[in-house]
Image 1: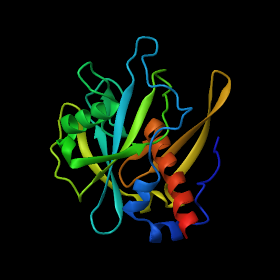
Image 2: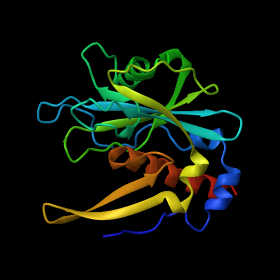
Image 3: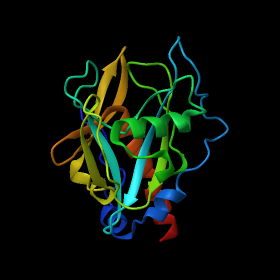
Image 4: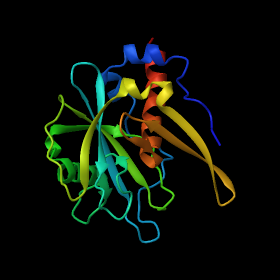
Length: 213
């Protein structure tokens, strides 16, 4: 069953014209005091991802990856670089930056972490994912790890505000309705936890750009 239309459907054109990378930096920060703790849940370590943002001259873009097709889970899905915490990681921001370097070859020192989006869990895991937003100075040179990554995607945030590529479906899980978000990109479908992160960012940008307008 289809859910609600894109929350930004009425102002999408204005948003695309006004959006800057400074707006992206402004809408993320420290987690709120009531944010769920990122800790081990049922023996599972928390995970962290980083949403890299850069301006290549025509407005801010997100870097996403398509997972390798031979992986056993989440095969071929579009996501942000990231993974589970390891004992030597100083904190979860270090986890996200380590995974970014391992997966696509971007050095941690090339990324300025601005803050977090809303922490979340997935259907398959009770452990929290902490999504960080990192700013890069221009479009990065990448080197993918073919064992984990099939391709790197550069997606203009302005395109994500196009209501025609957005879809929400209502799925039933354990007898309860669950909202599932989709963005239909040029050659891929962005959905699941990563789509929830992207929607979170876009909704924050709606408030920021509209408030400043």
